[in-house]
Amino acid sequence: MKILVVGSGGREHALVWKLLQSPRVTKIFCAPGNAGISGLATCLKISATDIEALADFAQTEGVGLTVVGPEVPLSLGIVDYFEEKGLRVFGPRRNAATLEGSKVFMKDLLEKYHIPSAFYATFTDREEALCYVEKQAAPMVVKTDGLAAGKGVVVAQTIAEAKAAVDLFMKEKAFGEAGNRVVVEEFLRGEEASFLAFTDGETVLPLPSSQDHKAIFDGDKGPNTGGMGAYSPAPVVTEALHRQVMETVMLPTVKGLAAEGCPYKGVLYAGLMIDEGVVKVLEFNCRFGDPEAQPLLMRLKTDLVEIMEAVIDDRLAEISLEIDPRPTVCVVMAAGGYPGKYENGKVIQGLAKAGEHKDVVVFHAGTALQGDAVVTNGGRVLGVTAIGETVQEAIAKAYKAAAEISWDGCYYRKDIGRKALDRV
Ligand code: AMP
Ligand code: GLY
Image 1 (cartoon, protein in one colour):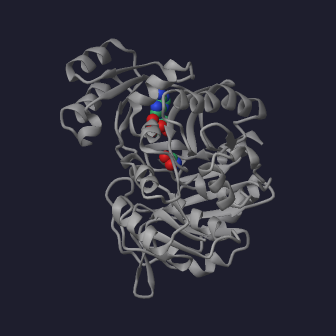
Image 2 (tube, rainbow, N blue to C red; image 1 turned 45 degrees about the vertical axis):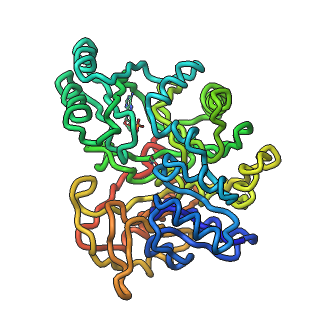
């Protein structure tokens, strides 16, 4: 079977790498891909949001399964369009992807179905938002309703900061229409975890727990990024908590969406806050996490094509997941300056040497080929991912391989996985 993967990040490299392990796959295409993906798949010069061109390609080439990585094409309705053309595609339809595409939709759904989450209020009027914010206790969290490439969330430490966030979103329109509505939310304390599951709209098949590292600096300091590293499992999600998440979050959300007429098929990703054994939802994503996909897919032994086809055909109940019990850790290597301004085009050294390390895969994110050289082409550049008998061992292997790699301005956190170590 021919497969098309849509996207160009570390998540998509991991998807291509995993899908290639399926005996059913004859060829993989990736649109648009990156330098690392081009070693495994044929990269296409089609943007991840050019839905018509992607569907044309899939039809002409006889692609049997299209796998969509990022949220933007899902929110634009790529799945609906492919289905109309009779093409098989893995991911939620547009109305179900609204769970990530609109925080107001998400919060209202959670409230309606009694799914635990932060207390909130939503606003379309700036004056009303400012008035409300003044009466709240800081810290509080201000969010754009729509997608803002992960930048539409401000954790405001003071009322003044919260008001500035309202103005940034609603007056300055920093994220355009995404800020037409805002959510003001209670600040939740605790430890975050990511919980991802496959679902066909009825059966929910959870992947192991994982944890991202959102902040740019060690010790979770500094501004938030797309994610500076991840590991799986996350010991903060105990067996009892896992059950709690399934019973109070995942199953009721999938049921609720079906009851609302937007059945959800694909990977459902809950961003959770855990405080003293109690779980609350921070956000939902309608796709695999990046970087969580890298450590999760490294642990997944079951054929990913089989899982995805079962989701599409509503027979996920027939599948059980086989998971490698060993922990995995992914260290993200980023361009200096990220998540602010950074330069592209820096030649990356040491990739071949790092690639020789046993139990390590170097997933590419923002990379491109320039002649024979691999150069940086984005903020998050690589995800060095390792598997070990223990989380200590996986951390050590990932950092040892990362140390082989360098470029002008290369930066990575040195404490990925430390929270797991603190708990074992
Ligand atoms: P979101 O995209 O909604 O998950 O927000 C991005 C990040 O902001 C989360 O991963 C948290 O670190 C932080 N955050 C969001 N909402 C809250 C909240 N209600 N309380 C505390 N932190 C939050
Ligand atoms: N790692 C966070 C995300 O994928 O949204």
